[in-house]
Length: 117
Image (tube, rainbow, N blue to C red; front, side, top):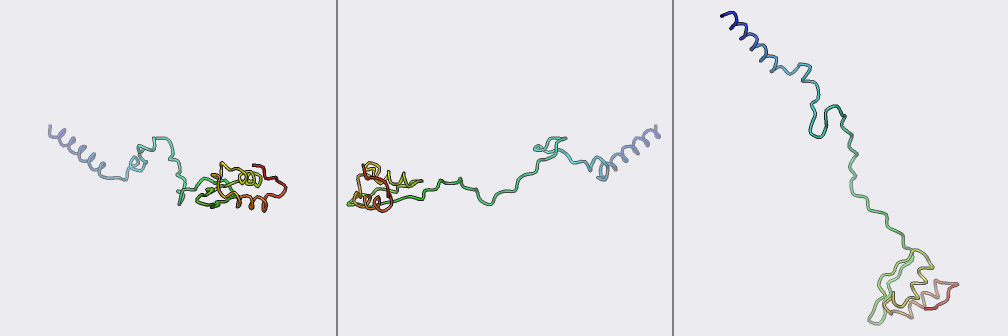
C-alpha cells in the first residue's frame, strides 16, 4: 500500500511540475481569440486614414450673388455658360431681383445669346 501511495504522489508531483513549466509544445501554439476563429489566419487591417476624405464636389465655375433694391438673387451656381445665361434670364429663380445688373452680366458674358425672359 505504501508503494502505491508513493507512486501516486510521484505521478501527481511530476504532473504539477509539468503544468508550471510553459516550455512545452502546446504552450507555443497560438490560441484562437473571439475575433479569430481557429484555423483561419487573421486578416490584415488597412492603415487608418488620417482624416475622412470628403466626396468630390461638382465644379461650378459660373456663379453670381447679386444684390438689388431691398432684395438679393441668392447664390446661383452653374456648370456651363449656357446654364449661366439661362439663369440670368430667369426672374423667378432670381427672386425678381437685380434685373439691370443681370442684364449687364448677360450682355458681358453671354455673346451669341438673346435676352428673352
